[in-house]
Image (cartoon, rainbow, N blue to C red; front, side, top):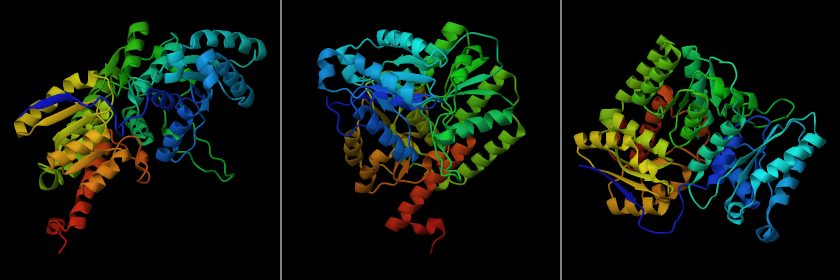
Length: 463
């Protein structure tokens, strides 16, 4: 038994698992209050990303575009940045931060974003002396990497440009990575139970926006510029995702001496245990009885399902590296067998992740093989599912739904985007409550499949 890491053999991409770098930077920056990102590229670089966010979260977000046209490819697009910033500042009096996110076209033509920002800073100081509006560059060339590297670049740029050393604040930085609002709620819950004051980077819990009696509804991130600036004064940083915020945590450690712990992504019992132990070590706060009870409830729930329903079921997982590896670790905890893992961009680093060695060790003990494909796409998933013929469950976002339907394989939607099931983004997958939800969701998907196929329904006490 072994774990084999391979690169997709085809040069092209058919039905990608991920979208591009700017999308990740856009998701990061909309998590900041009083901030509107300006995407420096074609109109679609913001429009289609906004559409994905709206499909997933059922909310609208303000994301601006410099709306480049053919002339800019010849003469440069800097005037479009200037016009975009001036329009945003004039139209939105509450605006305090404009990240300028580059795209493949503007990186290719070599627009001087930093020089344009310096020019605009002089304009803003003269025309709006009482309105401090910060402009920061976020370089996300979308001809390499993916939304994963783009998110990491977005968070790192926010911190690198805004963090300032001051007095110690006694807070613990939590860099969430690209997680759902339900996961952020779970992070806050655990910190509150432990009596730890957290600095959440980035706080997307407010993406679950209410519609008020006056019919007002506005979706915004809840991390402030002051929160980001104060990240340099925290007692430590925990990045929940290695590839979506790990570089930002390392920057704070390198530049400001803020100790950093990167991962593990707290999916499943073992990883959540490690996360709580790290919080305890960094803050000196004990783990309260309330969380021990939550842990016990999750274990009890998973124990009811693992051996009878999950054992030896073979699972294919696709998505961003931290999520895929975390889900694979969870699968092994509950006797599922994660035999096929697909990582969807050209970053080779996750294929050498030390967590894969631990997966291999447990797979060897249980006598099954794991195949890891990096730079994969959904065509790769479909081909391998058909070739193998032994996949019992698929875990991934909604873009893979037709593969599950066509091959009659039950599927649990996890990650981004999930648009064909209601409200999944409200549920956590991290923490003990996330582990319990994952177990229930997987079991119910398998049960529904058994009913649909009339396969051993007597196990469900149906007769």
